[in-house]
Length: 191
Image 1 (cartoon, rainbow, N blue to C red):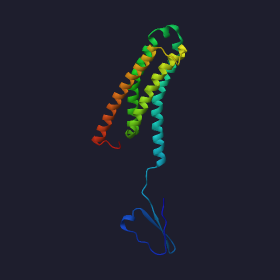
Image 2 (cartoon, rainbow, N blue to C red):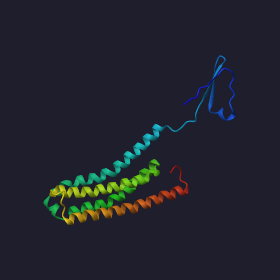
Image 3 (tube, rainbow, N blue to C red):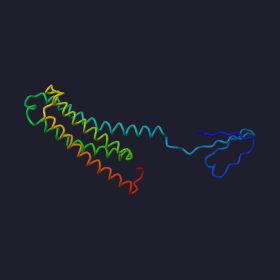
């Protein structure tokens, strides 16, 4: 913002203020306008940050929920329900999901240069893995019609799936954080 003192005589500025000020003369009255150095536009920074978080959330939760919703009709087929196909297809997806989430979150952080938010990304990755494992249980429960009382095998499969997927995700998060730390240490700009 501009600071406008009004002087009735000639205004002399210190040398340090001459670059960031302007003098306007109206007759014998001088108006001194001090101009602040330009700051980055906060609206642009806000827009970039919001685009970053929108992309992170969409890239994390749409695959986690969408794949299970696409497979939901197959759970109602008797042959698919009674075989190990249902369990194996969704378990393979839940093992590959953390790898995809780590790669997409790291690439988005690199593209937007937002590595300072990566611990929040790690939390989002873990939440997406948990949602994916819950969607596996939800598909089973809807097809059987027994949401509140699962059998021990389904409960064990769901918990082991979550344990393995979260272990993969945690290992990848630790590797990503080490990579970010080494980039900062080497002096990569703006990280």
